[in-house]
Image (cartoon, rainbow, N blue to C red):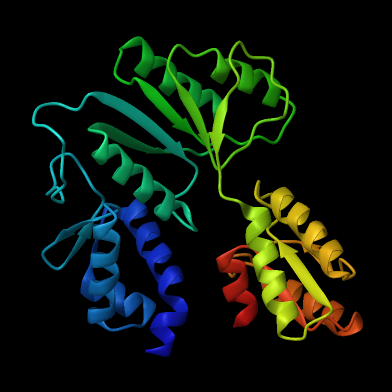
Length: 286
């Protein structure tokens, strides 16, 4: 039971990865693959199906399709949905499933059809897809999470802002000033507050030398570091050890990186770490 609680999120991420690669999984085979009971896998499938991320079938699961069974929902009226909104996200791992689930729940409540699409951060391909959908009048709104790193960000923001349908950026905050006709709307988690809660929790438990590990290349890192600097100043703490490196288990050199990280913790008398993201934290904990 301890193992199930500790690795539940990681196991479900692995399950989603297998589904994206193969389109379907069998409970027995996946249970053997990850070394857990078939009952545990069925529970994972049920949890993901409740968020409309997978479709339960006899003996396994598939990715949701228009042909698969649809979970019962409460709609305000019968007939076709009022609007169709396309949601483009870079991942169905980490905390994205919860965000997608929230968007789907809100869409159902507003009698809106939500189309989900994964992005590989190929902006040219995303542009082609979006342009085709708009020209065919197949969508009346967009929820986008583009990569806001790189020299082409101003042009990207301007292109998004000039689209003829409403657009909301999700988990992304555009630059304070953008060269668009209309100011882009955005919504994202308060990552700065999240790291403040974590640091204050550790501080209350007696830690005075706290380190921060940030996922290399993550768009969340800047917000986390901002909150980190602010809470350290409020508590009178030195900002301490800050590491920007991926230590996920799929990184071939993750063990060496973690050994180096722990050596630095020892050298700086660091007694606690705040680690982003979950896979990195699990890798360090192991």
